[in-house]
Image 1 (cartoon, rainbow, N blue to C red):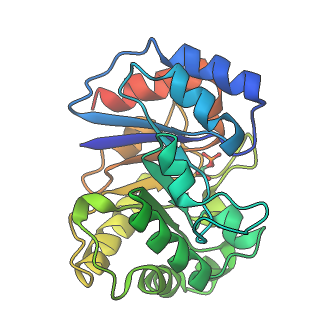
Image 2: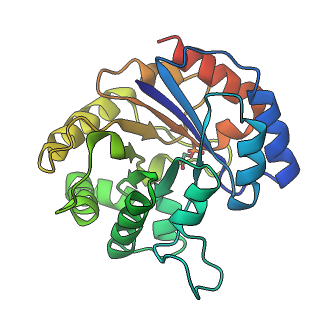
Length: 249
Ligand code: PGA
């Protein structure tokens, strides 16, 4: 199975999210080969879910609280997200780590909360430009994986990892993607690392400035199980082209 996930971040109004979902209703691809998923804002999650009700497109949250039901003002738990039909949640996206200060310990709690609630966490890991310059890529990824996964009992189909080098993530338009050859090398390394946790069968996606022009160069890599697309997934025509191109691999 390959994966094409769209992280809509905070790009779209509710109306735009529904319009995009309506647009995606009509795309056709081989659902036995590819899982397409979208991660709208929490406000639009139910509306997008309902719009895509008769399709195979899965829905996920961009973020969940680790706290369960109770007096947690402003929080939305993994259980609540699961309750309205989401199947996945991003955890540890670099924008959460770096802009909103989420620590590795924090992220670990979210992974656990997602699993308890029946969601599949899409654990995002990635080194910064500074890490890269200092030769600390593997150190960073190793630490992020270890903090999130050590000692957890997870079924291989209960987790997805997304390699998202922070320096490759676009800020709306022109990002600098990780070169496919480097991406392959890092994915091979991540898969080896996942053996430590008996999770070598977990899918590993690439994210960072994926677009309609370069999607095939990632989807065709042997160790890349799919892509997590940000800004390019928020435009109907572009995301449809990405799905058509990526699903043809
Ligand atoms: P981008 O974002 O495709 O806009 O670079 C990817 C991500 O952050 O998931």
